[in-house]
Image: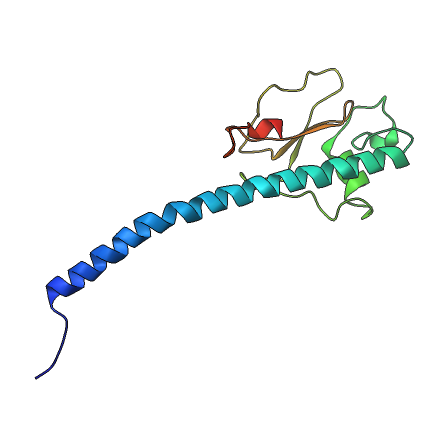
Length: 151
């Protein structure tokens, strides 16, 4: 006589596994969210420190201005040339952990810094060289209720 599980026993085991998964899954999802929040804060810290270091080493001209001339229009390419291509400040522009974008939206000198995220499907970061303001380009609030844009 062969011993095997009955259909009822298998259904009970599957139901128990489903309940356990329903209990555990939200825990992992909140940890994923917290990891993204920590990565965003750390990326901002690294980027802001690199911008400050660049500014000090270039006669108070922040990165983003072609040829370190603050009378010229700042560009994304000038930022990359100064910060990444030299290899002295950043190996690369990190990705925004929420949208996976590393592209900067440069806010020109005569423009106001946006009060909220813009084009989140294109830009990961917002940067205004004139004020050295650098922000995460993502809407919503974190697990503590603080807006991502205000990191």
